[in-house]
Image (tube, rainbow, N blue to C red; front, side, top):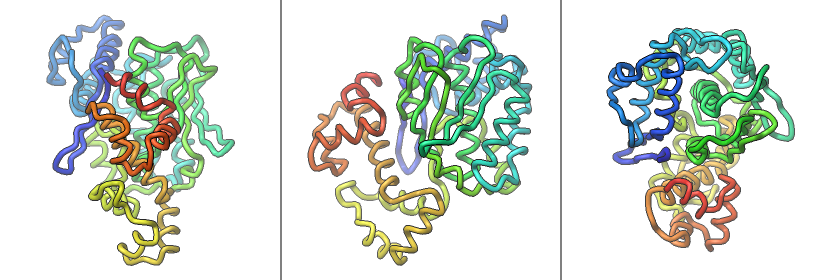
Length: 338
Protein backbone atom coordinates (compact mmCIF):
# COMPACT_ATOMS: atom_id res chain seq x y z
CA UNK A 1 0.00 0.00 0.00
CA UNK A 2 1.16 3.53 -0.63
CA UNK A 3 0.10 7.12 -0.24
CA UNK A 4 -2.02 8.51 -3.03
CA UNK A 5 -4.16 11.52 -3.83
CA UNK A 6 -7.84 11.70 -4.70
CA UNK A 7 -8.92 14.75 -6.66
CA UNK A 8 -12.45 15.79 -7.47
CA UNK A 9 -14.65 18.90 -7.48
CA UNK A 10 -11.57 20.96 -6.74
CA UNK A 11 -10.80 18.96 -3.58
CA UNK A 12 -7.45 17.29 -3.01
CA UNK A 13 -7.53 14.52 -0.44
CA UNK A 14 -4.38 12.81 0.72
CA UNK A 15 -4.45 9.16 1.76
CA UNK A 16 -1.88 7.72 4.15
CA UNK A 17 -0.50 4.21 3.77
CA UNK A 18 -1.78 1.67 6.26
CA UNK A 19 1.81 0.72 6.99
CA UNK A 20 2.25 4.07 8.75
CA UNK A 21 -0.78 3.23 10.88
CA UNK A 22 1.01 0.00 11.85
CA UNK A 23 4.09 2.03 12.78
CA UNK A 24 2.06 4.29 15.06
CA UNK A 25 0.36 1.32 16.71
CA UNK A 26 3.77 -0.26 17.26
CA UNK A 27 4.73 2.77 19.35
CA UNK A 28 1.71 2.17 21.57
CA UNK A 29 2.47 -1.53 21.93
CA UNK A 30 6.07 -0.75 22.89
CA UNK A 31 4.73 1.28 25.84
CA UNK A 32 2.26 -1.43 26.88
CA UNK A 33 -0.81 0.52 25.74
CA UNK A 34 -3.82 -1.26 24.21
CA UNK A 35 -4.21 0.05 20.66
CA UNK A 36 -7.90 -0.83 20.38
CA UNK A 37 -9.36 2.13 22.32
CA UNK A 38 -6.90 4.52 20.64
CA UNK A 39 -7.97 3.31 17.21
CA UNK A 40 -11.61 3.63 18.19
CA UNK A 41 -11.10 7.27 19.13
CA UNK A 42 -9.76 7.83 15.62
CA UNK A 43 -12.74 6.05 14.07
CA UNK A 44 -10.67 3.03 13.04
CA UNK A 45 -10.75 -0.67 13.88
CA UNK A 46 -8.28 -3.51 13.65
CA UNK A 47 -7.03 -4.72 11.28
CA UNK A 48 -6.27 -1.61 9.23
CA UNK A 49 -5.66 -3.10 5.79
CA UNK A 50 -6.34 -0.09 3.56
CA UNK A 51 -4.96 3.43 3.29
CA UNK A 52 -6.61 5.99 5.58
CA UNK A 53 -7.35 9.66 5.04
CA UNK A 54 -5.09 12.37 6.38
CA UNK A 55 -7.93 13.33 8.73
CA UNK A 56 -8.15 9.79 10.11
CA UNK A 57 -4.40 9.53 10.52
CA UNK A 58 -4.38 12.95 12.16
CA UNK A 59 -7.03 11.77 14.60
CA UNK A 60 -4.93 8.67 15.31
CA UNK A 61 -1.86 10.86 15.87
CA UNK A 62 -3.79 12.97 18.38
CA UNK A 63 -5.27 9.95 20.18
CA UNK A 64 -1.92 8.15 20.37
CA UNK A 65 -0.18 11.31 21.60
CA UNK A 66 -2.74 11.73 24.37
CA UNK A 67 -2.46 8.06 25.37
CA UNK A 68 1.34 8.37 25.52
CA UNK A 69 1.42 12.02 26.64
CA UNK A 70 4.01 12.32 23.89
CA UNK A 71 3.43 14.00 20.52
CA UNK A 72 6.55 12.24 19.22
CA UNK A 73 5.24 8.71 19.98
CA UNK A 74 7.99 7.86 22.46
CA UNK A 75 10.60 7.94 19.70
CA UNK A 76 12.96 10.58 21.15
CA UNK A 77 15.19 10.77 24.21
CA UNK A 78 12.53 12.78 26.03
CA UNK A 79 8.77 12.87 25.48
CA UNK A 80 7.27 15.75 23.53
CA UNK A 81 4.48 16.40 26.03
CA UNK A 82 1.00 17.18 24.74
CA UNK A 83 0.74 20.87 23.94
CA UNK A 84 4.34 21.13 22.74
CA UNK A 85 3.31 21.38 19.09
CA UNK A 86 1.06 24.33 19.87
CA UNK A 87 3.83 26.04 21.83
CA UNK A 88 6.24 25.44 18.95
CA UNK A 89 3.87 27.19 16.56
CA UNK A 90 3.54 30.17 18.91
CA UNK A 91 7.33 30.32 19.25
CA UNK A 92 7.65 30.82 15.49
CA UNK A 93 5.26 33.75 15.31
CA UNK A 94 7.14 36.97 14.64
CA UNK A 95 9.94 35.33 12.66
CA UNK A 96 10.78 37.48 9.64
CA UNK A 97 12.03 34.82 7.23
CA UNK A 98 11.81 31.07 6.77
CA UNK A 99 15.45 30.75 7.84
CA UNK A 100 14.82 32.56 11.11
CA UNK A 101 11.70 30.46 11.77
CA UNK A 102 13.49 27.23 10.92
CA UNK A 103 16.43 27.93 13.22
CA UNK A 104 14.00 28.84 15.99
CA UNK A 105 12.03 25.62 15.43
CA UNK A 106 15.19 23.52 15.57
CA UNK A 107 16.20 25.13 18.88
CA UNK A 108 12.75 24.45 20.31
CA UNK A 109 12.78 20.80 19.25
CA UNK A 110 16.32 20.37 20.58
CA UNK A 111 15.18 21.59 24.01
CA UNK A 112 12.02 19.46 24.00
CA UNK A 113 13.35 16.22 22.51
CA UNK A 114 17.04 16.46 23.44
CA UNK A 115 17.83 13.69 20.94
CA UNK A 116 17.63 13.61 17.93
CA UNK A 117 18.94 17.12 17.47
CA UNK A 118 18.62 19.11 14.24
CA UNK A 119 20.96 21.65 12.65
CA UNK A 120 20.47 23.81 9.55
CA UNK A 121 23.37 23.49 7.10
CA UNK A 122 23.49 25.70 3.98
CA UNK A 123 25.78 25.04 1.04
CA UNK A 124 25.94 24.23 -2.68
CA UNK A 125 22.55 25.83 -3.23
CA UNK A 126 20.80 23.56 -0.72
CA UNK A 127 19.44 24.08 2.76
CA UNK A 128 19.69 20.84 4.74
CA UNK A 129 18.30 19.97 8.13
CA UNK A 130 20.76 17.43 9.47
CA UNK A 131 19.83 15.25 12.45
CA UNK A 132 22.35 13.87 14.90
CA UNK A 133 21.79 11.03 17.37
CA UNK A 134 23.86 10.44 20.48
CA UNK A 135 23.37 6.70 20.14
CA UNK A 136 22.53 4.38 17.29
CA UNK A 137 20.22 5.14 14.43
CA UNK A 138 16.53 5.50 15.18
CA UNK A 139 13.69 4.02 13.15
CA UNK A 140 12.67 5.46 9.80
CA UNK A 141 9.31 6.25 11.38
CA UNK A 142 11.02 8.41 14.03
CA UNK A 143 12.86 10.46 11.43
CA UNK A 144 9.73 10.71 9.28
CA UNK A 145 7.80 12.10 12.27
CA UNK A 146 10.46 14.77 12.81
CA UNK A 147 10.37 15.79 9.13
CA UNK A 148 6.56 15.94 9.09
CA UNK A 149 6.44 18.29 12.07
CA UNK A 150 9.22 20.56 10.84
CA UNK A 151 8.32 20.66 7.15
CA UNK A 152 4.58 21.01 7.78
CA UNK A 153 4.92 24.01 10.08
CA UNK A 154 7.44 25.85 7.93
CA UNK A 155 5.37 25.33 4.76
CA UNK A 156 2.38 26.85 6.52
CA UNK A 157 4.43 29.80 7.76
CA UNK A 158 5.46 30.83 4.25
CA UNK A 159 2.08 29.99 2.73
CA UNK A 160 3.33 27.50 0.15
CA UNK A 161 4.73 24.04 -0.24
CA UNK A 162 8.52 23.85 -0.04
CA UNK A 163 9.58 21.17 -2.55
CA UNK A 164 11.91 18.60 -0.99
CA UNK A 165 15.02 17.76 -2.99
CA UNK A 166 16.38 14.81 -0.99
CA UNK A 167 15.60 12.82 2.16
CA UNK A 168 18.32 10.68 3.76
CA UNK A 169 17.82 8.18 6.56
CA UNK A 170 20.69 7.02 8.75
CA UNK A 171 18.80 3.79 9.43
CA UNK A 172 18.35 0.87 7.08
CA UNK A 173 15.27 0.57 4.86
CA UNK A 174 12.06 -0.60 6.54
CA UNK A 175 9.95 -3.30 4.93
CA UNK A 176 7.78 -0.64 3.31
CA UNK A 177 10.58 1.66 2.17
CA UNK A 178 8.76 2.40 -1.08
CA UNK A 179 6.01 4.10 0.94
CA UNK A 180 8.57 6.60 2.21
CA UNK A 181 9.59 7.54 -1.33
CA UNK A 182 5.96 8.03 -2.32
CA UNK A 183 5.13 10.00 0.82
CA UNK A 184 7.90 12.58 0.42
CA UNK A 185 7.68 12.80 -3.36
CA UNK A 186 11.47 13.10 -3.49
CA UNK A 187 14.52 10.84 -3.74
CA UNK A 188 14.91 8.87 -0.50
CA UNK A 189 18.13 7.13 0.59
CA UNK A 190 18.52 4.69 3.47
CA UNK A 191 21.74 3.66 5.24
CA UNK A 192 23.03 7.19 4.68
CA UNK A 193 25.85 8.64 6.82
CA UNK A 194 23.35 11.00 8.48
CA UNK A 195 19.64 11.74 8.44
CA UNK A 196 18.97 14.80 6.31
CA UNK A 197 16.15 16.65 4.57
CA UNK A 198 17.22 19.09 1.84
CA UNK A 199 15.49 21.80 -0.19
CA UNK A 200 16.62 24.72 -2.34
CA UNK A 201 18.36 27.34 -0.21
CA UNK A 202 16.54 30.17 -2.02
CA UNK A 203 13.44 29.35 0.03
CA UNK A 204 15.19 30.46 3.22
CA UNK A 205 14.63 34.09 2.19
CA UNK A 206 10.84 33.73 1.96
CA UNK A 207 8.91 35.97 4.38
CA UNK A 208 7.31 34.12 7.30
CA UNK A 209 4.29 36.12 8.24
CA UNK A 210 1.09 34.67 9.71
CA UNK A 211 -1.46 36.32 11.97
CA UNK A 212 -2.62 35.01 15.33
CA UNK A 213 -6.01 34.35 13.77
CA UNK A 214 -4.40 32.31 11.00
CA UNK A 215 -2.49 30.37 13.65
CA UNK A 216 -5.72 29.51 15.45
CA UNK A 217 -7.21 28.22 12.21
CA UNK A 218 -4.08 26.21 11.48
CA UNK A 219 -4.03 24.59 14.91
CA UNK A 220 -7.68 23.59 14.58
CA UNK A 221 -6.73 21.54 11.51
CA UNK A 222 -3.52 20.07 12.92
CA UNK A 223 -2.03 17.54 12.67
CA UNK A 224 -4.00 16.40 9.60
CA UNK A 225 -3.04 19.56 7.70
CA UNK A 226 0.70 18.87 8.05
CA UNK A 227 0.37 15.34 6.67
CA UNK A 228 -0.45 16.49 3.14
CA UNK A 229 1.73 18.08 0.53
CA UNK A 230 1.15 21.71 1.42
CA UNK A 231 -0.52 23.41 -1.51
CA UNK A 232 0.29 26.90 -2.74
CA UNK A 233 -2.74 28.63 -1.26
CA UNK A 234 -1.90 32.30 -1.44
CA UNK A 235 -0.44 34.95 -3.71
CA UNK A 236 0.29 35.24 -7.38
CA UNK A 237 1.85 31.78 -7.63
CA UNK A 238 -1.48 30.34 -6.50
CA UNK A 239 -3.26 32.18 -9.33
CA UNK A 240 -0.77 30.86 -11.86
CA UNK A 241 -1.13 27.28 -10.59
CA UNK A 242 -4.93 27.53 -10.64
CA UNK A 243 -4.88 28.83 -14.21
CA UNK A 244 -2.61 26.02 -15.39
CA UNK A 245 -4.70 23.35 -13.67
CA UNK A 246 -7.64 24.37 -15.84
CA UNK A 247 -5.70 23.61 -19.04
CA UNK A 248 -4.03 20.54 -20.51
CA UNK A 249 -0.25 20.83 -20.31
CA UNK A 250 -0.02 21.05 -24.08
CA UNK A 251 -2.07 24.27 -23.94
CA UNK A 252 -0.11 26.05 -21.21
CA UNK A 253 0.76 29.59 -22.31
CA UNK A 254 4.24 30.96 -22.74
CA UNK A 255 5.49 33.24 -19.99
CA UNK A 256 4.83 36.35 -22.08
CA UNK A 257 1.31 35.17 -22.93
CA UNK A 258 0.65 34.33 -19.28
CA UNK A 259 1.69 37.83 -18.24
CA UNK A 260 -0.68 39.27 -20.87
CA UNK A 261 -3.54 37.12 -19.55
CA UNK A 262 -2.84 38.32 -16.01
CA UNK A 263 -2.60 41.92 -17.27
CA UNK A 264 0.90 42.36 -15.94
CA UNK A 265 4.19 43.31 -17.60
CA UNK A 266 6.35 40.20 -17.97
CA UNK A 267 9.06 41.80 -15.82
CA UNK A 268 6.55 42.47 -13.03
CA UNK A 269 5.22 38.91 -13.15
CA UNK A 270 8.75 37.51 -12.95
CA UNK A 271 9.67 39.79 -10.04
CA UNK A 272 6.51 39.07 -8.04
CA UNK A 273 6.86 35.32 -8.49
CA UNK A 274 10.48 35.56 -7.38
CA UNK A 275 9.38 37.43 -4.25
CA UNK A 276 7.20 34.41 -3.42
CA UNK A 277 10.11 32.06 -4.06
CA UNK A 278 8.53 30.79 -7.27
CA UNK A 279 9.32 30.69 -10.97
CA UNK A 280 7.06 29.84 -13.90
CA UNK A 281 9.26 26.93 -14.99
CA UNK A 282 9.24 25.44 -11.48
CA UNK A 283 5.47 25.77 -11.19
CA UNK A 284 5.01 23.91 -14.46
CA UNK A 285 7.47 21.21 -13.42
CA UNK A 286 5.72 20.78 -10.08
CA UNK A 287 2.30 20.38 -11.69
CA UNK A 288 3.66 17.97 -14.28
CA UNK A 289 5.33 15.88 -11.58
CA UNK A 290 2.20 15.66 -9.44
CA UNK A 291 0.06 14.75 -12.44
CA UNK A 292 2.62 12.19 -13.62
CA UNK A 293 2.73 10.55 -10.18
CA UNK A 294 -1.07 10.31 -10.09
CA UNK A 295 -1.29 8.79 -13.57
CA UNK A 296 1.51 6.30 -12.94
CA UNK A 297 0.14 5.30 -9.55
CA UNK A 298 -3.59 5.20 -10.24
CA UNK A 299 -3.85 4.16 -13.91
CA UNK A 300 -2.30 1.61 -16.25
CA UNK A 301 -1.95 4.04 -19.15
CA UNK A 302 1.22 3.60 -21.24
CA UNK A 303 4.13 5.85 -20.32
CA UNK A 304 4.24 7.29 -23.84
CA UNK A 305 0.62 8.35 -23.57
CA UNK A 306 1.25 9.99 -20.18
CA UNK A 307 4.28 11.81 -21.60
CA UNK A 308 2.16 13.21 -24.43
CA UNK A 309 -0.57 14.37 -22.06
CA UNK A 310 2.01 16.22 -19.97
CA UNK A 311 3.29 18.09 -23.02
CA UNK A 312 6.53 16.19 -23.65
CA UNK A 313 7.53 15.88 -27.27
CA UNK A 314 8.81 12.33 -26.79
CA UNK A 315 8.81 9.67 -24.03
CA UNK A 316 12.59 9.90 -23.56
CA UNK A 317 12.27 13.55 -22.49
CA UNK A 318 9.62 12.54 -19.96
CA UNK A 319 11.87 9.75 -18.63
CA UNK A 320 14.73 12.22 -18.08
CA UNK A 321 12.47 14.74 -16.38
CA UNK A 322 10.85 12.16 -14.13
CA UNK A 323 14.22 10.80 -13.02
CA UNK A 324 15.28 14.35 -12.17
CA UNK A 325 12.11 14.85 -10.10
CA UNK A 326 12.04 11.55 -8.19
CA UNK A 327 15.35 9.74 -8.80
CA UNK A 328 13.25 6.88 -10.24
CA UNK A 329 12.22 5.89 -13.74
CA UNK A 330 8.46 6.04 -14.46
CA UNK A 331 8.37 2.25 -14.53
CA UNK A 332 10.16 1.90 -11.19
CA UNK A 333 7.85 4.48 -9.61
CA UNK A 334 4.79 2.59 -10.90
CA UNK A 335 6.08 -0.70 -9.53
CA UNK A 336 6.85 0.88 -6.15
CA UNK A 337 3.26 2.14 -5.88
CA UNK A 338 1.66 -1.12 -6.99
